[in-house]
Image 1 (cartoon, rainbow, N blue to C red):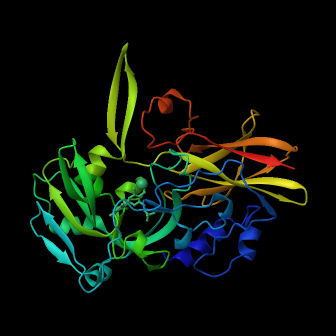
Image 2: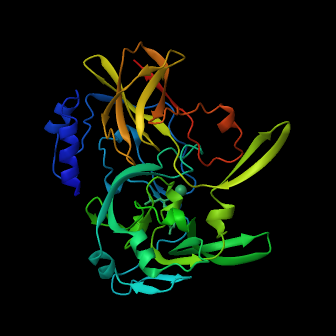
Image 3: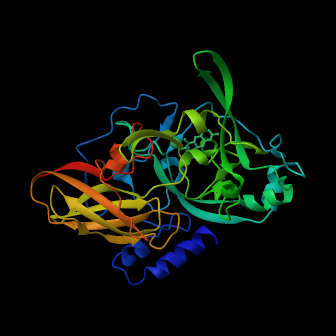
Length: 387
Ligand SMILES: Nc1nc2c(c(=O)[nH]1)N[C@H]1C(S)=C(S)[C@@H](COP(=O)(O)O)O[C@H]1N2
Ligand SMILES: [Mo]
């Protein structure tokens, strides 16, 4: 399904909802047909992220108050880059599938593009998002196109002892281990062979209908829908099947969640590598038009069944889902009419998924027991002053 076909289908599906009229009238072109127009004046949040001390790593963030498109245009899509930005060209580019496989291959970009094409609209979030005072815009939604990974792995034929698939990026940087060894380590992430074989995993060469931009991994990246950003390896040059678990920097050192858990009357510390997305939502902005206030926001990380909003310490009240409802991997937009009194207020949202799970408060023991900032999916509270 192309992006424009998808837009049409979504618009048809939303025909009965209140927002459909707005969406249809604002359709600008096929590429960005989803438009949630910012009606009225945006009232900026009082709590703005702190200045970003790591601009080479957190290269770009979503500006929540400017969020007006369900599909995030690449120039607004957050960028995380831990090492250098490799400059790869189509002529020299090869993807090697090697290791414990019966038929190793080396594929050109043309080889990959000649294979079956599949698209997925997937909201990707960095698992560090909301965990640091200068990082709250590490999420974006795009339609990714590429070729299914499973068929390629099947053709390569993993040998019986192969249990793990390592995805190597072309970028590398210095890492020091135990203050003893300093090496230049390539970016790499792995998954079990079973996880890698999931039907939705794609080797992606297009983002929103155009070549993958350089910062998003040109010419090829893994897109693993439902997984946190770190699993979606950019500048992908090698896929390797191995017979043990992989423990590189981004599996075993960084992107590791450390928790203090209870086992009966004993306390244990657990260490787990960041993997699947978690249920989350956030208020994007407050607007005022004709003296009426409204809050708009997004929810993602699981198929979304509903979103509620709480003003100050008031009751939770239902928001209206406006775009993206029913999508498996993409965020849902929501709005909430707010009869706001003048003064300073807090706005909090919480999402419920299709299985009835509710996004937790940040002080819930299941989140408060984390010693690390990864996977911070608690309620997000923003502050705003109403005139
Ligand atoms: N090769 C490579 N792939 C990578 C990274 C990286 O630094 N190098 N960063 C990862 C992380 S932590 C995230 S959150 C996503 C961000 O993808 P984006 O920059 O396209 O938004 O890419 C992932 N893939
Ligand atoms: Mo990330």
